[in-house]
Each structure stands twice: as C-alpha cells, then as structure tokens.
Image 1: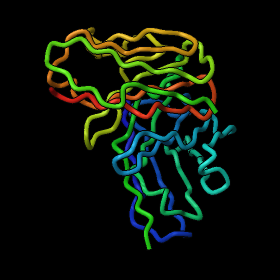
Image 2: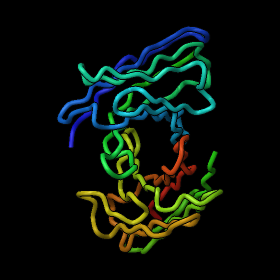
Image 3: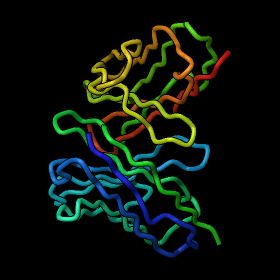
Length: 119
Length: 107
C-alpha cells in the first residue's frame, strides 16, 4: 500500500517561510496525485493543496493560495509544500496524503508534521 | 466551494449500539465521497470511498450509503475501538472539502 513520511515542521515567526517534505516509499509516486491536509490544534481537517502525478497541475485552498506552493520531485519520490508569509492561523499538523489510482480518495496518509507560527 | 454539513457533531453511544452519521453537501457530488476515522494523535484513516465502497481491511460493521447531496455512515454494532472522530469528504471538485467532524464517545 505504501508509506508516507513528512518532515520539516517546527516553530517559525509570522511572515517567515517553511518547507515541508513528504517522502513516499512502497509505490511509484509519479502515478498518483497527492494532497496536503492540515489540522489546527483541537480542530477538524482542512484540505490545503493538491498536485497531479506529473506535477503539472496544482490546486489550492483559498486560505493558502498565493502563499503556499505544492510541488513534487518524482525522481526522489518526494512531495513538497513551500509555505511563505506564514500566519498564526497556519499553525497546524500538516499531513501528506496519496490519492487513489482509479478512485478519488485519500488512501494513504503520513503521520503528520507540526507547524507552529508564533512570535 | 462545496460545503459539507455533518451531523451530529457529538454522539454518545454504548458498545453494541448501531449508530449513523450523516453528511449533506451544498451541491451534488455524485458518488465522489469518502469517510475517514481519526483517533487522537493519529492520522486519519480511510474507511469508505465512492460513497459506499469499504476500504481494504475495514471491518464489515462499517457501511456507507448515499449519492448526490445526502450521505450516511453506519456502524452496525459499536466496538470499543470505534470510539473516535469521523469525517466526511467530497472529492468531485477542488477544494476537496471535509465535514466538521463527528466525535463518537462512550456513553
């Protein structure tokens, strides 16, 4: 089924940047669309961004469009989320998730990486 | 954007009970619909895809139904490990919105 492992989270000040990474194993990552989903402390799930298998098409939530950039390097089986102009409300656990091959669903999830934005 | 209204937000039930969680979409999503289970401190896990297809390894006491705008997740006989938070999600168009969640607690 595969495995996803996120990294790159941490404490950062408002207005600064962070780059998250998600390494995939156990499957050919370029075949699948991928998403980032976040969860603020004590809150529900929020879909953040997605990218198709080739990396040519991207989608964003309104809350992050223009500040966050999703990308992927299929040669390294790695998904990225470049987070610029961070805001306090971006504080959350960020999960990467793999879409289904033939059915739309978030089938495989990473364990999450925590991002805290605070001065 | 498509909004999902999930109900109830909290549900108290006992082991062995049959429970149903519902989710209503602000516009039709056909069967591009999924349900997830999340336990504290853990990543969500896929339960149901395409509105009614049980994901591999998920116990048969879980079932999903619906199409268009109205969907439901039913657990036929609650087990201790089922006490968790459940989320619905539409996947017909981006952004892939989630419902606000249903926290299932032990009575």
